[in-house]
Figure 1 (cartoon, helix red, strand yellow):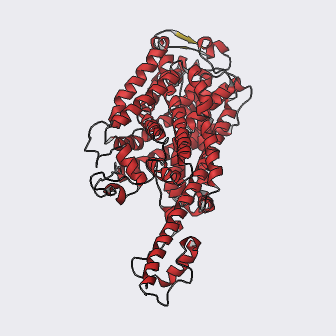
Figure 2 (figure 1 turned 90 degrees about the vertical axis):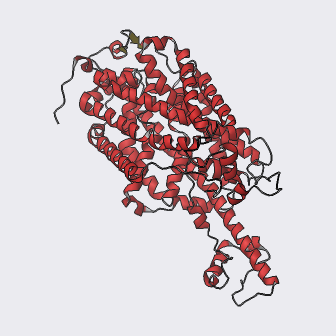
Figure 3 (figure 1 turned 180 degrees about the horizontal axis):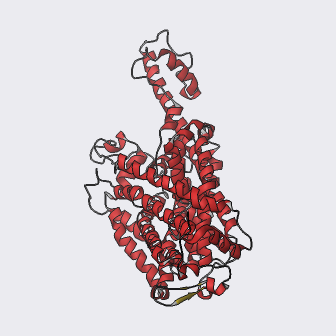
Length: 584
């Protein structure tokens, strides 16, 4: 394909014969000039790495990736798919955004405007998507604050079903579901039966959302100088908690079953197009491509920073974090599944014991001691049941650990229902609950800081008036986010969070990244881009990036866009509701 002709402004970007002052100086929208000498900078390389890792490693690593592994019968095949896509798509695109931000030293609006004024819409699109994501993402942080506040009591409030003060009986909605589901849907969300029933505002969640936005505003009020200090804790603390949970988890009964389930290889899923779509989506969102946050953070780096090494390092940390989080989740789910299966065995043996006292013994009677359920292995019970299930009647059921493992819990349900259920069983449950929700809070905040930076940095770079009033812009953006976010604190708010998560970001972000890749590869030209990177790094990246950017990444993102669009069309907009009467 013939390389399109470039106008004078496009040719001004990072030419090999330019001086460094030309590279880092861009006219802003108000006619002023933004000098790199006046631009804030990271105090250290560690600050920058923690910021990038904190943004890319978010709540999705803790619940979306483990859910995808669970949905596909374990993570063996999915891990291999992710590795392939990470190498040929994820790392090249991440490297491209890092290099563009670092070289031009502007946010997303300034970067794409600098390549060509006609491409400035890419930057504005990134800002809009960041704002949509920030609206509902901070609601999840508010939920974490609510659960964190409720963790300082023993027993935990979701440990058992409450009693109706009028009838002195267990609340029916809780009895039909579970204590953790009841606490989540009724006590935390006080949810309506459908999205059509908006209901009044949930005052507690409204207060938590206000607190969440206040934390974000205070942490970012001085730009990267203030948020970077918070990153030292918010980016590192989740890893400490994950390792603590892993050490505690491997001591639980059922942990090995969970680990085996996770790593059991099912390579046949490689032939499933849906698996590749899910893996590509995970790589795409895990690295934070298209938000403009990666570009914004890298724009505060020195021009000669080794952004190629950063791309490899942050991508690897992100992937290993997903594996670590999945390991913790599957250990806990293995314990949960075994506890439920053993409870099933004990319940059935209790029924058999009643039959024995009534003199109903038959030739099919178990060979193990039914009066001591704790001594009966699940496999022994299942072997007996497989031989005599047709003779024992409908009240005696099978008890399968594998079936319990196969019961997946997605997204918020994994954190606020499945995990809370397990933590209620731990000795010293308030301690473990506090640790877990502190981890979620810090994971959410570190990602939220990056998301907000993807909004604020481009606006301040492109409009000198906003750049001169950084504090006012930050506070105003957070106030606006809180006001619009009140939509999610209605009793039906959880349904809107689900809809925003599913439909407000996926397609727009993929489209943004496609245009980014085409702009660098075909408008500006990969050879010139590699020349500019060579000027920065003092060495030339491998030529394979040229072909990955021009062909592989564009085709892969185009395929992901097509698959996502077709899935959205054929599946149609859906959400999972909670009916108070039927409890499902």
